[in-house]
Image 1 (cartoon, rainbow, N blue to C red):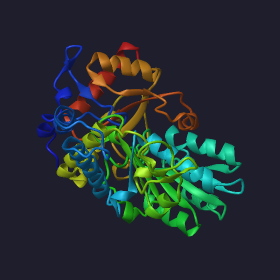
Image 2: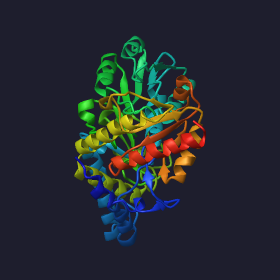
Image 3: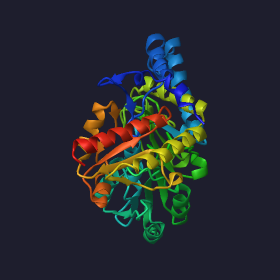
Image 4: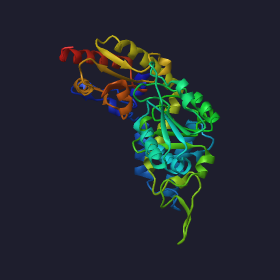
Length: 408
């Protein structure tokens, strides 16, 4: 088990008050806070060895290149990729998914094909496939969720035929907290001849993730949700697939040779990293991976299980609350969406902010899912390694205050 009291000492931003009350940060599903190790790693790069990577025959550039590529190796090890060449740095999971949509989707998907996504997808793993379907004439079909807020695997089997070219699923829902049985999805998809893209934006920061064991073909993740800086993320792709894909962007760095007549692409993964990359951000992401690895992802998961179990128990005691997502903690992560009778989610969030508590309110970039649930918006509290049980008590007390203020 993690000692959150000790962990909190590593996060400077948490040591402040909001409206005269100690900050309770419960919005890590949107973006996590950063430990000193990440802040210092980026600061050290800018103070001591800032230079462009891969291009300079001088010590600063060589040191920057080494740190940048070491970060790539750390990410590869963190998700157990077969090779560092299977890791492409991107700005976030959204860019990683779009890379696959453009470089693989538009090249391999045709009018006779189908793409499957779940009804709980974030817009980042929905809109790119809507665009591919619109441009190619392919059919986009949705795997429904059932009354338990889980995917209907029977419906998945019915949709999964020889026309399906790609199954694009979330590892963990950013609204419902639902953890999908990824390996089961992959086994069935591969048996039907389809590839699988996994949106790991929520899963990778919170769950032990082994891409070789899961056998996913692509995985996208955002660094800023896993203690790293904004503007950092990565795409994992099986090497043979990445080799076959054309570049996403073209220009400098991603080339091997350019003539007046054309160009030859660089080797993996550099052919997908055009221009000067986000060097400091990649180094910061590497430091975040080191931090999480030091904690142990099994411990991260167990800590969040305990927080989620306690939160579901305490929140269920709030009068007039409606909680969305599975009730079993082994089927969900530490993001809990809810509504209070008669209160708009934005009003709830505003009142909680007065109490020094930061939560999310809105559709959480999952508008179709909210439409299916019959609500325009939800409030969402989400937990991470630095959260404590006492903060959940503060949340419940503030929700009771909100209910009383609005006459509930």
